[in-house]
Amino acid sequence: MFDRELFKGRTVVITGAGRGIGLATAEAFLAHGAMVIAHAGRSLPKEGPLAEAERQGRARLIAADFLSHNGVDLFANTVQAETDHIDVLINNAGTMQGRFPAEGLTPQQYESVVRLNQTSVVELTTALLPLLKQAKEAAIVNTVSISARTGGSPGSSLYSASKAFISTWSRALARELAPDGIRVNCVSPGTIDTDFHQRYSSAEKLEATRKSIPLQRLGTAEDCAPSYLFLAAASLSGYITGQVLEVNGGQLMA
Ligand SMILES: NC(=O)c1ccc[n+]([C@@H]2O[C@H](COP(=O)([O-])OP(=O)(O)OC[C@H]3O[C@@H](n4cnc5c(N)ncnc54)[C@H](OP(=O)(O)O)[C@@H]3O)[C@@H](O)[C@H]2O)c1
Image 1 (cartoon, rainbow, N blue to C red):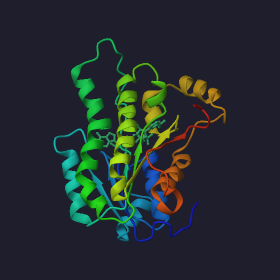
Image 2 (cartoon, rainbow, N blue to C red):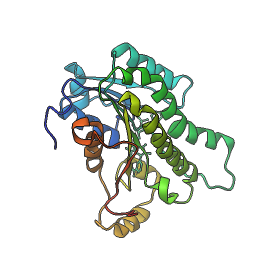
Image 3 (cartoon, rainbow, N blue to C red):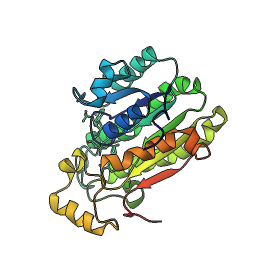
């Protein structure tokens, strides 16, 4: 993909790395020399490159439910105990949690979607900022979504809006943290064939979406991973901050 030593000596923290886009991205950072501190929600991978790297001391896997009381704090505290600096923070954990129509929306549904996709990202970034400031050319990359711009599909209004919040917040943060040498960007996946859609989209809906995509296929987690590496590496994207990189096969062009 890139130079195999691109992240040699660099410490990368990535959330939602137990599967899907986060897992593929964590594995790509490992393959390019990084020390990876990987978070998973409820499922830690027990096999594969990440688990193997942990046995070799090149990765650390930590589980934390960001919807549980103190889940973000517990993860942040563990990271703080593991390292004295962070070169790259990838905020990727998130999901729709269900389709919640506007009519009949409950306060619990609202709180849960916003807490996972929005509040936990702000809380974790805030907690880890002192460690990012200890690195020379730190980068934050946040996972947002094509739905932040399109509004998403029925039942995803809060999820889509929470991703739009992260897009805008990232731009503001990029300006605020630039004097510290910290760049902040986002990767915005389109329709990526992960467990996410197995849970929230029917086969018919996915096929209709596939046909509407100019490149005529759904994306894969591996399609997304290189964008995170690109935006994380100062040698490749050192003059890019406050941007959203859309990875969607042409599904959205504007
Ligand atoms: N797939 C798509 O088409 C698509 C499109 C746009 C944006 N995205 C975004 O891309 C990111 C990754 O999604 P994906 O497609 O890879 O989906 P995924 O396979 O469902 O992965 C979601 C990740 O978030 C973690 N997570 C979920 N609930 C959590 C909780 N309560 N506490 C902590 N972590 C939690 C999951 O951990 P556990 O499963 O271990 O709990 C998992 O690692 C998400 O932010 C998603 O919103 C995906």
